[in-house]
Amino acid sequence: MLELVDIGRSYRVGPGQMHILRDLSLTVAAGELVSIMGGSGSGKTTLMNIIGLLDKPTSGQYRIDGQDVLGAKARELSRLRNRLIGFVFQSFFLLPRLNAWRNVALPLMYRGTPEAEARRRAIAMLERVGLGERTEHMPAMLSGGQKQRVAIARALVGEPRVILADEPTGALDPKVSQEIMELFLALKREYGVLILIITHDPGVAAQCERQVVLANGVLTETRC
Amino acid sequence: MLTRVIAEAAANLLASRQRSALALLGIVIGAGAVIAMLNVGAIAREETIRQFRQLGTDILTLRADGLTGLGNFQLGDIEAVPEMVPGVAEIAPFVIGGGSMSFEGTTAGGSQLGVTAAFAHVSRLRLESGRFISDHDRYELYTVIGAGLARQLSNPYAMVRVGSGLRLGRYVFTVIGILEPVLQSPMMPVDIDSTMFVSLPNVRRILSNPSLSMAIARMRPEAEPEAVTEQLQRYLGPRLRDATLSVQSAKQLIAGMQSQMQLFTLLLGAVGAIALALGGVGVMNIMLVSIAERRREIGVRLAIGAEPGDIRTLFLAEAVILSVTGGLIGIGLGLAGAYGFAKLSGWAFVLSPTAAPLGAGVSVMVGIFFGFYPAVMASRLDPIEALRAE
Ligand SMILES: Nc1ncnc2c1ncn2[C@@H]1O[C@H](COP(=O)(O)OP(=O)(O)OP(=O)(O)O)[C@@H](O)[C@H]1O
Ligand SMILES: [Mg+2]
Image 1 (cartoon, each protein chain N blue to C red):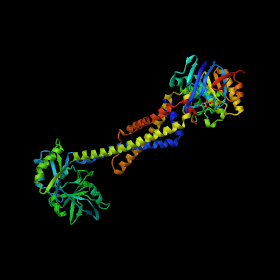
Image 2 (cartoon, protein in one colour; image 1 turned 135 degrees about the horizontal axis):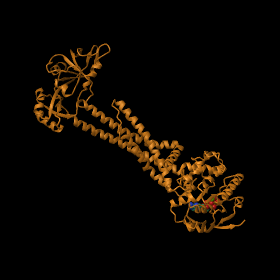
Image 3 (cartoon, rainbow over the protein chains, first blue to last red; image 1 turned 30 degrees about the vertical axis):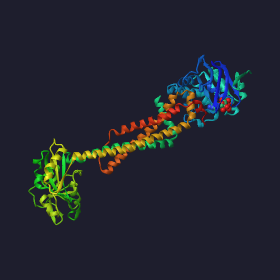
Image 4 (cartoon, each protein chain N blue to C red; image 1 turned 90 degrees about the vertical axis):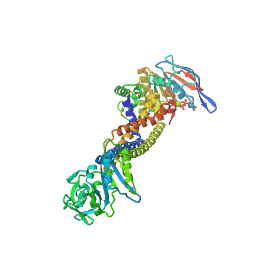
């Protein structure tokens, strides 16, 4: 479903160029659960931004369902992100002024879903991630694990086909981290959604059916 | 969709109440000044009309200016004016004096006017009781007084009425008439409401050096003040000894007052406009600060699927809500200010029909104008940069 071919990404730093990704290729089929590991600064977040249509590579091709997406304009990219991709970030990134269900409903709002329906679906999704009791809570009143559940609900509410999670358990203790991982596994089974998890935790990576490691700008696959 | 954007923008503004309130201030002052100005202008215009309603706008006042002071008209020359000057319908000469009058131990200051019988008609005076001075009264010690003067001289035990005796200097005048209350007119050198009228012959008794230096005239309906003034100069000018004639017309005075008002209005308008512009810059500043602080929020919204246009609309809505709220408060304060001004000056309060809609419209415009740049800035943020922000 996702097809990256010879992706390169370099930053201009001072007079020279810094090549973070070099001729990186990756193909992921729908419904797969893939972990990406790699040292700090190896370019994992950079790669995720490219896959998530937030950033463009300096070279290479990127196709989703066989369609080239690198030529798309800002508005089109927004629509593609809204329909296709759900993001989960390390530090949750909930909007502090919106309560739990409004945070979750946000992707639907930007799609033009009527508020009543958006609310119903957001609350249903919060129930699914185990937060049915806390739909009106403000983010500041939630624990780290609960915040990440809200963020996962927000990523899933629009029924995307891809979930991109950048160190989703990085800010959580091992027990909560394991709960979140189990939630991801369950959601993958239920919704058949493709999940890419960037992680430093080998225990997390071990639960994924495919594991890739990013080093020196290229990916190498490790079979478990 | 729009109501949702407005609700969200309002919630964001409420979350940083203090800062929003500060940003409002400039708009409040600007809109307030504009509204107050428009309304005070309307009140003053209404008052001008009211002041001239008593005498009418077809009035002229004539004055003989001597080399060292007041000049003198010849009574005969004045009385011949309606015949000799085609534009004048009627005319009444008068002599001005000032001194205190007393009644039953109560003393009041005011002016005395020596007049002919024509005066009442020319200046449209109406009597509450009694009659006006007649040309047959000559040396009779009769007087007619204004309503205000009658009130000032009366006390609960002794009311001034027709038949009462008023002392002025060595003479006691019998009141033969009391006028209805009248507003002071910019066309008259004295306030008729607190004036004591006597016949021309009697003036010699109460003033040591009386001069017949003024007259009030009414033009014919179709006459133009400029032409009539010229005719008067041609006829009366050569007949004055050691004096020049000056003529003032109500129409010209009104025009003068109006152009003065316009200048005043323009000035206040400029002050309001500057305050509004400063307020707008304040809104812009607050929006830029707020956007800098909420970069990550913008990044998240973009990642979730907000289009750049959605971000622009959100921040534009915040700016417009800010300035409209400020505008509404300003309109309230401006109207209150105009009301206070009317109360203080004793004028009638009138609501200018254009003021409130104009104020509201202008504050929306200010919000859009000054909110546009920050909103576009926000919508152009690169999502990765925005997400990276701490
Ligand atoms: N805008 C930029 N300009 C220059 N260099 C950048 C820019 N963005 C990222 N980099 C560099 O790219 C490299 C990869 O960054 P990236 O955030 O992808 O690392 P990462 O693998 O996610 O690291 P971590 O595990 O610490 O999150 C880093 O060395 C970083 O300094
Ligand atoms: Mg990273």
